[in-house]
Amino acid sequence: MKKIVVAVTGASGSIYAKRFLHQLAAFPDVEVGVVLSKNAADVWQHELGEAPELPFPVYGLNDYRAPFASGSARYMHMVIMPCSMGTLGRIASGFSDDLITRAADVILKERRQLICVIRDTPLNLIHIENMRTVTLAGGVIMPAMPSFYSLPDSIGAVADTVTHRALDLMGLDPKAYRWGE
Image (cartoon, rainbow, N blue to C red; front, side, top):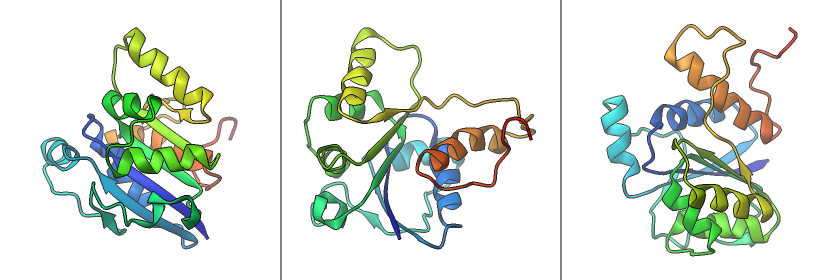
């Protein structure tokens, strides 16, 4: 059983989180815990015109009793999708002020996989240095940069080129287009 934490922040890109969570639900051997930042639901509502309906347990932003707040729960992966630059900065500085940054801190200290799907552009030097710091600590910086060689024919299909890559990074096969096929 793979244990995965998914955090959704208030950065633009709710479509990625929605599609990713529903794709994760298709994997029977996956246990997922979800946490949303204080702005995530508002951005989701604005961008998608709906409240988040998630197929997994959702933990409060200050619920430090969530299983993934401790390394002993053995959550092996954390995906922050989308990851705001503020969240990335707090992770880079080791500032664990909520469940998202605490879980990221746990994942990094346990030498497990942290994937930060950043969406902001352009980037300033502070963002770049924070990405460098998180990378040096063992995290993966995965910009939400869609690919087009699969010839996606809808916004959802474009978003899936990003979400499928995150699934691939965790060793889950999304049964998606592969280069050369």
